[in-house]
Length: 205
Image 1 (tube, rainbow, N blue to C red):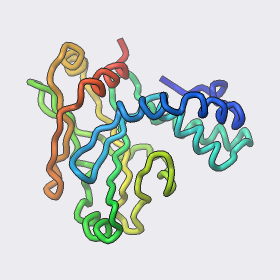
Image 2 (image 1 turned 30 degrees about the vertical axis):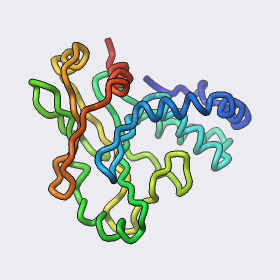
Image 3 (image 1 turned 180 degrees about the vertical axis):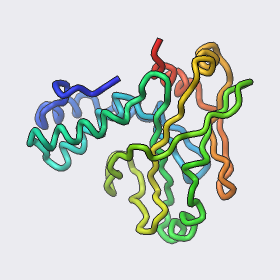
């Protein structure tokens, strides 16, 4: 999976594509989104979700210079699944700014405590923040809260690596949950069937 240079649309072409396919884009993103409790959301990335984010950045910032476009393309292309992993953006969201200011510092290090648990095969822990995409601006289509001014970020990028045995178990119907074991935010949820079906497509045959 990759975003090639010749597949990046011009601003005009993307504007037309966006109008024609807006609902499809949102549906794909929603299908690959998992809520974890009240304040966390995992957006599992794919070539399609990353291509959308790339094109949105180019459109919002009116980037047309080839060097600028290539810089952004390389950044987003590096975040795509590689055939044996899942990639996800973790968004910590508080609607109330005061609550966010109080509670976000309590979640320091939370990005290191995420896991995918596969029935009979234990937990796969996330590798966090190897390559960070730009944080969405306030009012972006992601709807994510802007990053905190403090050291604790509200946006993290996670990678879950799976062994061949684990990938085979997922393909053959093993139950799977995703969660967090941070003491301030213990949570785990079953990955919905539609989301899991989409995520299985991230694995190479």
